[in-house]
Length: 191
Image 1 (cartoon, rainbow, N blue to C red):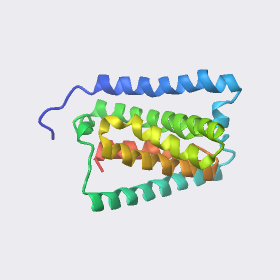
Image 2 (image 1 turned 60 degrees about the horizontal axis):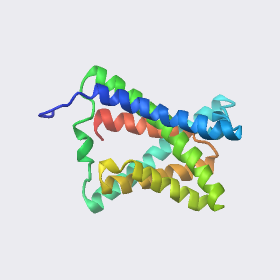
Image 3 (image 1 turned 180 degrees about the vertical axis):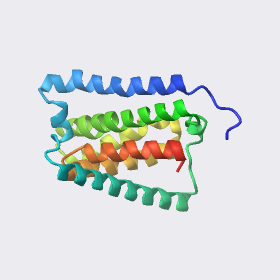
Image 4 (image 1 turned 45 degrees about the horizontal axis):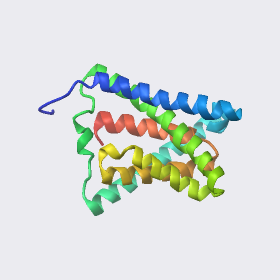
């Protein structure tokens, strides 16, 4: 498929470690200090099968909205694939399994850190939910700057949309599900 395919297993393992390092940093550095639990930051626990279904439905809707935005973006500005990461996408069985691990880790950890922790911290500092939403989205885009400016802007928009859902739903779970699913599918099927 690609002329040169680098060894991605060590990269994927380091990405998983980094994602969980972010989680530990927030858990130990911010949440424990304030007495906030991970469950509280996420928006509580599921109370019923209906809650699970609603969050899965919202995740699917969020994924559909994001896909529409991305297609529109590509139509107006041309396809802007992050060329810097194309060679690092999985091709073999072990790589695919680890990619799923990276994607699930990113979905959980990044949503918790950016849409949970940072968004709440920025709201405390600015006294504005909307400025906080904007700031976490910008920080999220900048944290993906290695993919290029266009991808960083697109990812900031992604962060804003996911932050908006977190505010509206009062839960990070739909965003976590959509984020992980989107990363899994885009990495394996390259869509």
